[in-house]
Amino acid sequence: MAVRTSSPRDRRLEWLLSSSAIGNLADGIGKVAFPLLATTLTHDPVQIGALSATQFAPWLLFGLLAGALVDRVDRRRAMLLANVGRSVVIGLTTIGVWTGSISIWLVYVAAMLLGTAETIAESAGNALIPAVAGQDRLESANSKFQAAEILGQVFLGGPVGSATFALFAAFPFLLNSAGFVVAAVLLLGLTGRYRPNEGAAPTKLRADLVDGLKWLARAPLLRRLVIIGGLTALTGELAQAQLVLYALDDLQLSNATFGLFAFVGGIGGLAGAALAPRLVTLTGRKPVLIGGIGVCGLAFAGMGLFRQPVVAAVLFGVFAGSVVAVNVVLATARHALVPGELLGRVLGAWRTVVWGAIPVGALLGGGLTRLLGSAGATFAVSGFLQVALAGFAVLALRRFSLSAEPAHDQHRGAERSH
Image 1: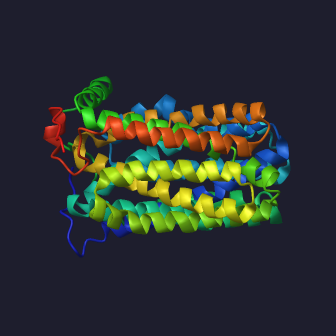
Image 2: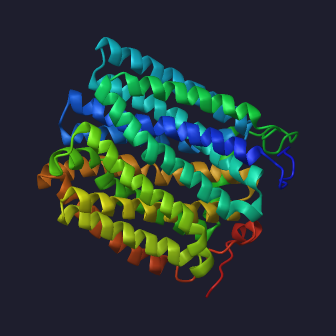
């Protein structure tokens, strides 16, 4: 990959982080505005869950392909073009909302197109982090990107999305579209070339995909982390896809106060991003990963059992902080263990499983809410399943260390026992 060596005065990380922060703000506005728009068109929990499923289904369909693509092209350019594509899709959605011609099926189409562009943007952006941060700053860099995601998607995007939707429904979509344009422009400041294996002989896409999957098949620790990540996403999304119904129906919140509810989650997420590197330093990555999954489960179980707005908001903040800590550990372990030239393909496989589990969880969550009669009951089930998953993670990782290991050792399937 033709890039400069990272130095203390290297500003590339700041440019990438700024673009990611603005993109996450736009995404956060949309993640609140789209479900609120859907509730004006239907109140069926299955159809609401289907919206989340539609947004993440492209990871099942195109995750591997997107990963292989970002290992063949300039990753900055791929991320830039994907952000422009997202802006166009949301711009057209804004027109539909403004004119009153939108339907739940058009919302699904927009969600599918956005999810497809996201497979490129997220794969390219994540693969760029080691190139601009360097191996010695991975934990810190991943914490910053997690903080930017929480700030944009929850802390700021949630309140802005709900408040502007309450003013007039097209407003948050207009802001969403503009945000992705700004995110694309900021990437122009990211100097250098970011095409892996530049100058090497061209290869076939199918061969690239096979190489990435073969590497993952010979990496036992990464395989276990993929499974744990997928199960974490599935069990968590059972409830998260029903969050808007939980807030509006179980807690009796208004559309505007739903954003404030998410605001508390943002505070917890920021705390998790700030504390994760310190906790890893004190205890190691594995205790933070397993403990974080367990705390996520206890928080969701509490939200399901105690349906009082203040208590639920605090528990949601605890969940957000814990899930961010889990994500920091998983992202850092992945960056440390996967060779740079294979990172896009391994990320594609990872997110095909992990993010592909989200639409499955969303649909199951909608059916569970319909069966049990309330979103709160779904939160309780989700919480208990996540606690059980923490126990599974203890067994699955008992022979492994999550501290950084050379990528070639993982390629040989090396294990390290405690």
